Length: 632
Image (cartoon, rainbow, N blue to C red):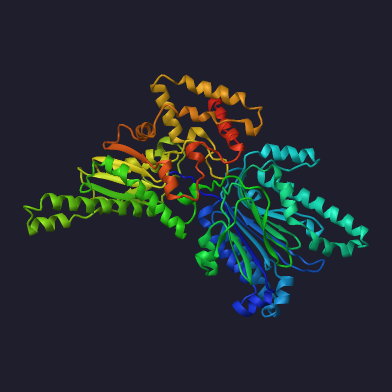
């Protein structure tokens, strides 16, 4: 992606269903779960680089024995950092105590991190500081084993202020307003309440305090706790929780915004944010990895019983389309096909822009995530070239010679590796003029493959803010002296902020919004901005379900092409010699390519939860009032 959108968080969960001795005998190590967790987190490194965390729980430990381990890092290479700490500690114990080497019971008793219930998380911080305190998993500690709670997730709540106020009304004193804390404390509150009710009931049945604890573990209804806890949640979420005694759950939001995939057999229950992670790490087929339905939870009891429970009534499915365009790894069989189709569906617009001149057009992509869409675009371009060859042959069939036929058939589509990112280059000077010059050289180009009469078509997965395009890529491509530069986005115009876990919280950062404002100025209709502001302000005290998205009115006067043309103007300047054009995917074609993931609120403003409209209006109010702050 030419714009630094970064990524989403990723979750990984493993529940070993056999005793650790089983894995030692079959796979050669009682650290089987730890090793698999490392692989699952590395395979989801694409989802977050700000931090990583790991937690494990040992089942059936004695009082006085440590049963919860947690390690987190916000270092530059957080996954490597946390597992180097884990490995160092394990190796130290094995070297100091050689008797542990072949005794799994001693390993489990004395070595941290080894356990049957494991949770991993990679974080991209859309909210909060990038310090280790902000890194998942979060831990809520208690001396009663079944009241310990560990939580991690890929989520953002639109109504965090409501969740915070609800906790205060319960008499709590939350240490922070971030949604991770408020969500964990809400679950913790109902966990405490359920445990207290069970103890009261058991006491009437004649159980004493010691005997009541294991009975509470057996009777604890995790689904009931989740139903009560999630009643007021509004957002997109894939959340993992582990209780100190060994129960665990993974819950998905009712619109299916955030992804959850799972696999289970007689040895393991595994959950991740992406299907190919599970396929690769556990060597299982595509068909054996299932998607968790929206509004449901996977619940694994301490005894290993696993069930899928309906927690919240599902909404209309609006799974995030950005997952398919960009965030998820392209190695997923479905996503690979969808990304190719996204490229293919753009070809009609590209052909119109180049006047079907495939002979004098060079096709390429911006590294690296747009490569799959590039293949789809090239396949469509090759179909066009073959069509042109057939047309020429039929047109000239009466006078066609062998040499002319050979000349026609020799035409090849011109695909080149044009943009090369210099990974070693860092923009270390913060002074604006110096920094801009350095940014312009983050990418290098391949010289000698573009002629002055050529069109240069570059596909990118999306154009969000346009900053890198303007300051670097377009200027860089212009050094090749093409006639025309056509930048193609496999995603539609991003017009509205996200509030479910992607870092697009501010309207004024979106280049499509900037373009619409410029068009309003040119048309003498900029007073519409104030009118929209007044409408948004008038809704501030309404209930979420009554709030409308009035920001849509900013775009209503213009068709997609007008906005795209204005974006092209904004992203080029007098120093660029080539004609610059921007082509965006249409929303209609996005839905054709990704028919099961129809979450398109960033393109259409149609938010899947009731809190979304409040967020977009708040973002507009912040823009109008000049407030540099988030809308949620």
